[in-house]
Length: 497
Ligand code: NDP
Image 1: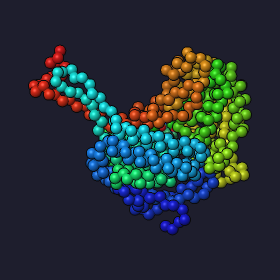
Image 2: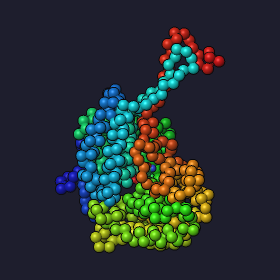
Image 3: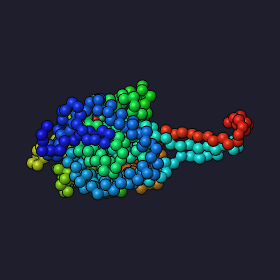
């Protein structure tokens, strides 16, 4: 196939090559409709090939001392730093987030590389006293084996770094299927692994659809763990199948995150956090704020301030530094968001601004949706419960903190919750009673740092966490070791009682 744009090929066992099918799909810029490249389309055959390479490589990779594995991560971190601007521009071009946020996302991968590089010298286990004399008791981390990583388009390098880096520093090898919407970033990231000198087969990249490549990964008997981030529907399917196969599975999924604003809050501070959390990344963060739970006494003041700020937001190509809100990722996402406008109106919500697709002037060829605010939303409406994944915010008035917490916790998801209050008692009550993996006090629902666990409760996750040292547990088998040097039979729970 002859083309002026780049071709994105699989990376299997240290070699870049097209899939056998010989077909390619187009990668497009959601801001402009421009063609960015062509991506090879893989089948289960390429998955098998990549898994075979990863399995072979794991035999020697797990014997490389962990501090030496960590050194590779430092090299990866250096290369990410050197290419930060190029990576950020690639990211904005293919998924739309504004350039400043793209730089922030690349920084997250840089931070993760250095943080996990350091873990190569820790990978901490436990040494504990034995209940018997002359006996030593400890626990060790062993790699799980071959890790199958399936990632979404909305954080194409941050989430990939949360999974690949703890996996490889722990001695696992990787088969990675990135989202179909973000192939260029996946290419750039894997190129960095290659240039850092990672032995062949340690990281393998297979492009293709979730239905074909993703499912083949879940089915493959030599993939020992699936780590997935994406929608709850897909995660649930993966969980069911992986359960039947007794395969370890780590899931990070959707959110229906809320900011609570109490009547004692600093309203200007709250509005800053609401605008950033609801409309940043065009509302396409798993932690985006899509519910605003407001004490009835400050509802009118919040609405007024929000409308003023929303009207100042500029839509456009995220590469333009003056733009606040980029496009949504593709036309299906645009239609999905738009469909919720009728749902909301039918359910009786009041539209205060936005509520429609826009193709004005320079936006003609992109997928743009006006920042939208609904008010007088009640907790029985669909927009109060379903993940819309766009720049749509629903204001739900409440009478007090107890009702606010009850509304916050009433959704199926449990990723991120935030509260604005200047009352210490309310702060601590909220910190303990908000049912989500992340809680922010006097800050919006977004802003996680890489050295703490990331993930959520209920339909957001299955108990595992990405990021932080908690991510190491996803990619480790715990082994408990007892060394008895008494030179006689000692029976635990019997001889010492
Ligand atoms: P999807 O679930 O559609 O896709 C996620 C990944 O899974 C993609 O790589 C996709 O491939 C793949 N996939 C799709 N179908 C299957 C299948 N049957 N078997 C295996 N893999 C499959 O989610 P989105 O891409 O729409 O991502 C947005 C979602 O991700 C939102 O719900 C968001 O909340 C969530 N998310 C959660 C985060 C968290 O940490 N909790 C962080 C970021 C996002 P393909 O691209 O080819 O379809």
